[in-house]
Amino acid sequence: MGAHEPLPGPGSRRRANGSLESEILSLLQSTGTALTPGDVAARLSAPLAHTTVATTLARLHTRGVLQRRPQGRSYAYSPVTDEPGLTAKHMHQVMDGGKDRQTVLTRFVDELSDDDENLLRRLLGTHE
Image (cartoon, rainbow, N blue to C red; front, side, top):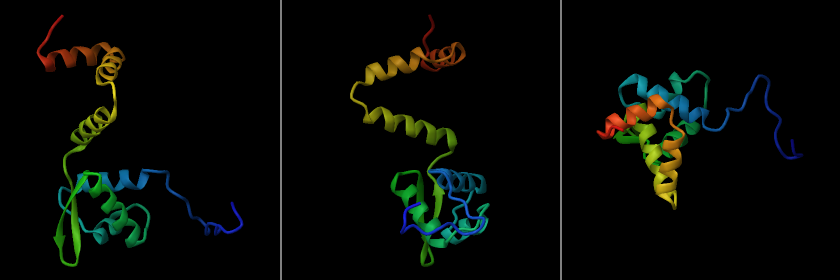
């Protein structure tokens, strides 16, 4: 630790990058209803400051993972889609960020298991 960094308090642990976002997203997906930052904070496995939860929710909203609607003096957040939909959205974002779409898709398909390749062929309506 650097000379100016505060020492962690007794029993404190830092979360791994993305673990708070994952926990919040899972919580919102399991509730089936929009929650405010206060609602989310109250339901998390470890206590966190309201501002930390609100900031994380806002980031997820900015990235298009959550939608929000005004509720009182705050917002209520809910997922834009279910977990498979979010995975598909992420795959599209990765593909959109690449420069050589054909090579990326080719390598992706080359690395599929036989079962996944057969599933993909059925979904595309092609058979070899």
